[in-house]
Length: 511
View 1 (tube, rainbow, N blue to C red):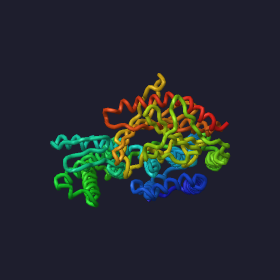
View 2: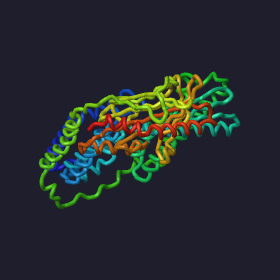
View 3: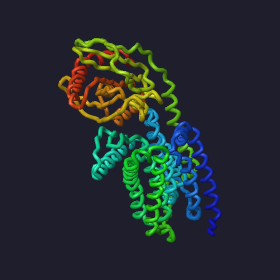
View 4: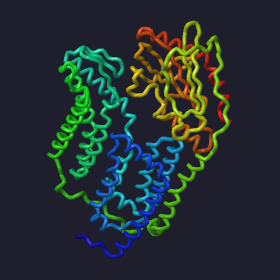
């Protein structure tokens, strides 16, 4: 039993109540950000583990109570600086409607609040339990497409190595026994996130050396990626060898989870050969004998400054959100350079949400047909953003359309290099479409989502205009051999209509 002296006990009582009040204030003021995390935990099985992160972190802190009892909490101005950075990051993320970054900033704000009030020595003693809170943020969806590509590459390569002929188009492939596609559920993201979360926790509890903890955590990242690729190949082979009778229904998922469970048990079993949980934790560095200027100020003044930092960002964000939208005329694009409005030639409709103004017009010239769609956003706000995960060419498992190839590329439009997001779509009716899409921000074309978000967020925070537009053009093509002709059609249309599109956006832009 460790019995702290009475002065230390009273110091912890005062500091504990103060940091608890400050964190409670942060939860109250940033409640929408916290609830945005909870909403994802609730609707997505991939991130359902988020419910357990805060309780696990509290349990890990409780395990360190003996160490904390020997320490003296001391206010630290560096924690206030970290709080200011976290609050600024949250404000920028909120202005750009980037929930993931806002959620990370919220967690960082909680940790830096503890740093400011309790001091660096206490935070270092609780380093892993506090850092573990970041696993509560539901992040990883940006990995879905790369992971789908890895799974498709591995599966096709293994099928060819096995001697089975494969025809592949994007993430769709065909073998003699049937057709397959790698969809979101096949990406292995759920396996990866579960493996990393469990693996990092296992490494912390099992090892004492930070080197071993790091190596096991890296293994927890690599193993599920290869395991998922092997799972996909195994399922295809089971279906192929059973004449497409097995591994197609519920057993498709059962085989996957059983295989993943076996791989994780194997990983933990192998890791147990180097376990160090019977050894004591590494000693913490000694606390300084003399108090810093901030520590001499006491906990309450620093807590007051912390409360101010916690309150400023959400209050300013509320003021930004209260600004009314400007009055805008209808968005219209005039015909130009011989291109004329025409009847619709495709049932495909892009999925861009929340636009303040939208126009979709098919054009024709000399038997060349192009569909133009512009979505204009006068101000960036939640569910009405130029860059949004809900803005896409087609949804996953669309019953009518398949995306058989998408990439970022640079094309020549009117003699100038122009970035575009190029996609090849295939319909169940046999129609194929070549699509170019780009965003226009401050009069410049871009396809870099990160840059677009940052530019618009900075504009919004400093009170400037934060409008932008998505421009999308599409034309039909017959087969792979006619792709170049389709590209030439889109390039010609973009060059001819560029002035008309610029005039249309200038007319609708907020003053």
